[in-house]
Length: 164
Image (cartoon, rainbow, N blue to C red):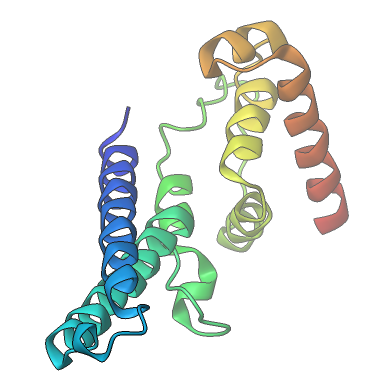
């Protein structure tokens, strides 16, 4: 398990605990007796609800790699995916007799097309198309069914074809 998945799991667990605590506070304030509606309880409830909102924001940011609730801006270009795609160890080098020269514009176009794919689609597509692994080998490595791998590759091929 990667450190990002561990962090997301920890945040999700912390959020669950905060929600349980908020619900226990609401039970105190939902009663008809005015003595339970003290200003301290109201303030604490507001703080806990703010913490839950912050946790939701952080979890969404970690899940998508983009700042939540942003429609436009620098983050729309998926900087996290781009840094992964710029790692040249991801794609194997072609044998010298097959090596071709491509321009920077062509490289950028290829990166834009690959950035449209989901992480799973991208992984399956690259393992199958560039590394030549079979569906069974990819399924075993990713711990999913062979049919799921086929679906990811088919979706990736469709998206690549539409982008070209």
